[in-house]
Length: 608
Image 1 (spheres, rainbow, N blue to C red):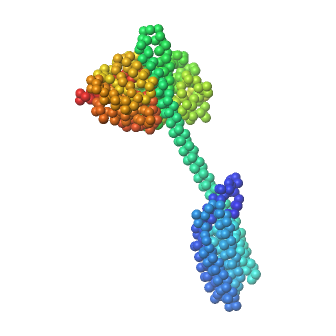
Image 2 (tube, rainbow, N blue to C red):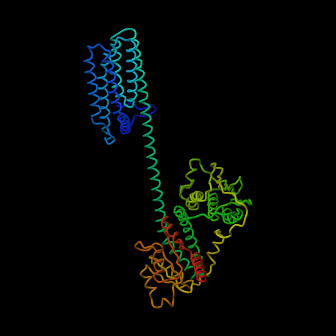
Image 3 (cartoon, one colour):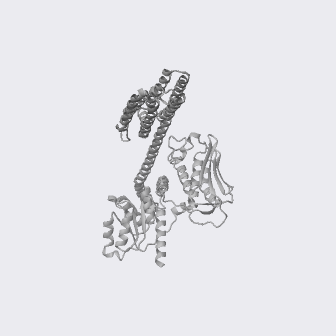
């Protein structure tokens, strides 16, 4: 190919792409170069020996000289430096031209031999020699289809010599053979041009596909990098926001306890509602990090949908009534196999999302059995979703028709969590929508036989709200040792503990904690609970600090991690150690409940 025309249906080639195509053509020719030249040399010697005994003796010396010239040219073609894959791409045209010159010289030197061969005064031998030459020539030209200039350079001189020789000697047979050879020349070269275009088009398509595949790989890599950067950003932002929020929550809880039954208590309640709202938003981002970290492991079992639907209705009925919408959660009597908490989270996110985007009408939750599956559908009469937005709604922070980021519509993470949970549980999530008419989300869940479902593990919002106001202050039988590098959090935690009659000592690092544990009265006032922040100053990890302190001082006290860390890899490490962890901001109720559970478990272990 020497500046071949672009393949049909293609725009003019990019110079680099054209060079790559040419390189492939040159490579294919040089791959069989030695074999082709050796075959030509052997054929020329064979034909020369044949002609030596059948032509006029006066021509024998010329035949020997001609065969010698052919052999010398062939030997030069074999001995001359050849193209290799190490040749730079930009030198490819020079090698294509060199190959064309070599095969043209071989064909030109071989062409005069036809003058002697067709001079044989035997029609049968003339026909036989002509057919043999044409057959050999045709195969040789076909081998050079990849490079059009080489195909013409090799094909025209040799066949022209045969045609001219047959025409020169004349006679009906020779003229017929000359015509036949001419037709063969035209047809073979025409087919060669077509095949050259096909080969070129195939290579262009191959390289374009490779380029598209490379671009796709780059886009996937860029998407993965962006996703990782997004996760890191969320984790960092979440951690930095949780730290002061945790201090605010602790100070607020202590202040609320101090101002109980006083007029100022209402202001504290308003403050805590704002803190809880922000904490809920941060917890939503934490859910994304936990799912991406792979620390959420489903525990599927048989469960009654009606027992799941009841708290779902209780949770959202007030919200629906406030928006003047109807919420229908229909009993089905069906049982499914799934994780109770995670399925409840999926459904609550779908119902919450439906209520936010429905202005009139209502939301319906139904379940129907379909063979070995159960379809759980959440339908609404809301604004609907346009087809071009159907996939984007599952992206983080994407919200339909909310350019102003109305906070009442949440963060736009709910459906992203639904999709992640669906993949984790193996529950297919389908969506159908008609703009202006409403949307239907369908979960496909395996059907299960009715049985006794576990009664624990379902976090009902009603019971959570009760825990916020009514909880039992733990009886520790000792003091709490808190390790946190932020002074505000240490002060807030000790203030909260003091408000509930708990003795707490707060330190900034491992050295200060060791000093507390080495005090003379340490045995008289033992540490009953070791509470550590996960990320401490200068890169120290609270988990490792706590474990070292427990081993060094032989502490039997349980350990509780409190962290604003949401990086997936760190969440995975905490999970592997099996140490209980609370995520900032932590409410007083949640903290006291966790301490109670730890003390209870530790007491049972001691008795055992």
